[in-house]
Length: 181
Length: 262
Image (cartoon, rainbow over all chains, first blue to last red; front, side, top):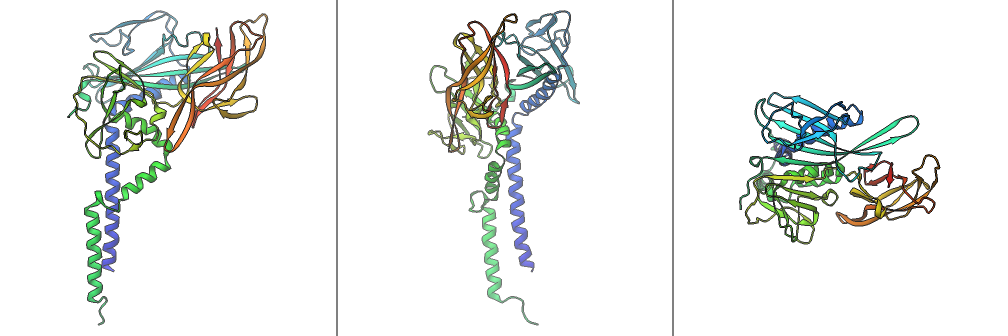
């Protein structure tokens, strides 16, 4: 009986050990770039909500933003900003998620891409997710998620569909894996 | 009192336990590898989940890009978390690459990567990642642009050539008149109307998927379309609106929308 119990325990041990190893390997793969996953999740959830519920802010005056990060110039002062103007009465919505260490600044607005400029029922949006690791520090990473919005209008209502198109991600060099030939 | 086991039985059990212990110790190379069984089963059973997270897996494992735009020697280098080796895949999955002094932007076709393990061999067969490569990284910063969505959404409208381009390929198109999904290369009818509210004209336009591509998933090959070509009705000579029916690729479906052709 004792030997039989030992035998079964050894099998259980082997299975548990393998399960742990498998989990660790899978987790390891996803944590190499945790920023990508974080940016993707934050941007997809927040920007998708804003576009789907059509709760965008429309300003009566022009808004100056940084073209690379989508940050409103008046919100955060940073060196090296490129000025892009969101025209008056165009949608621009921004928010800030505070964390224990730093914050995420996200914004969404209509792109000036030309591929669909004549389409009255298809719209392109850019959703920017920027992470500042500490309150006063400089930008750590910036991601842009492109969204395409379909508007289907019938006499009773407007149906909105949102499709994420992809992510454009920019990490500083120290985040990348080092190349070791 | 009668003995529970004979000496031979005890020796046999000890031998058996020794053999099992040996397998446990040599688990990485052993015949019995429970992890491998479970991995295979898990991948087969949750292909949808795997395809979603597979995107991130591939993205996570890209450690560098050694680009040469004028030839086909663009490689994506992977870090193999299992063997801690560096390996690579070739450019067949890259649809576009833009090189600037500080950043590299690579566009990778998600469909072609879907469901694959981390690496492929020189014949394009999906294999485990093995083999070290030598080389020198030429970039200090890396920008990765890639699709993490499978949705075939309208990317641009080329009115001059009566063509609608999509962000990712699709293999099925919804036929409104037969109320069925058909292959993307099958011609379907749709409704069209002119751009005049004072003298409206409604007619039928014909659509067919074009610019086909072959997508390999395991041993299965799917014909997918990257664009739709429109045959305008003769009754509408100038600009018109058409209903672009729903298109889909596996579980990713985009609904119908009205498209304007100037």
